[in-house]
Image (cartoon, rainbow, N blue to C red; front, side, top):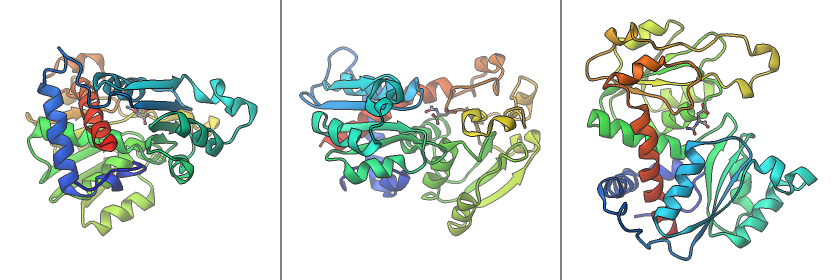
Length: 306
Ligand code: NCD
């Protein structure tokens, strides 16, 4: 398998063989008996998690993945406040220093391009855990794994992406990753002003992926094999736009529009886009999706440290 060094965008997962091997490994971890006994694959290795933005799933699952593989973690909660960033240190200097203490760095930062800047100076692999409204490649990887688990295939399906497609980095990365597969149809459903940026639309065109846009949520539901819900990324908008276009809300009435085999996903956190009553529907896959994040990140860390 080709080496994975930095993971800045989904380009790291452009080779279908890389994805196949990561998914095989993730499934081994999902089924495996590491729950009883800690495997020692990453013994003696240290992962640094440097997060300048809040996180629950991404940071905890990376840290749990590292610990479950026998490695160790150094971390700072809210790096913008509790690292020397508050004293004016640049991201580049912080990364150079942390890279001298750890064997890999997982970075989340509010600016597009921050992970690439970090990778340019880092002595160790940098994994992008979200760079502003840019990308979130490891989320796309676990999303893809979830689609395969739930739907049973990675080609010939319709995915409806609903919500904030403009600022939602998980949508951006998933679109780029889906570009490697055949027979994908995309329905883009967003409130006005929150549509998919032109660059990602052009990407879909270049890859000959059929897509259509709508501002009507219900329109997106009927044909969807996968419904990918997202929250409005208020923190990325100018303050005066906060009240604009609340996201679409999936409730139990909508469930009858969805196909029986449809898969309902959300990278989480949800901020009201999915009614809590939807959770009981077997098609609701978002908690399984979040759990898959652990196994996919275990697989990725193992590959990176090999
Ligand atoms: C996402 C993110 O941080 O981009 N969360 C996650 O990593 N699961 C989605 C979001 O915050 O809306």
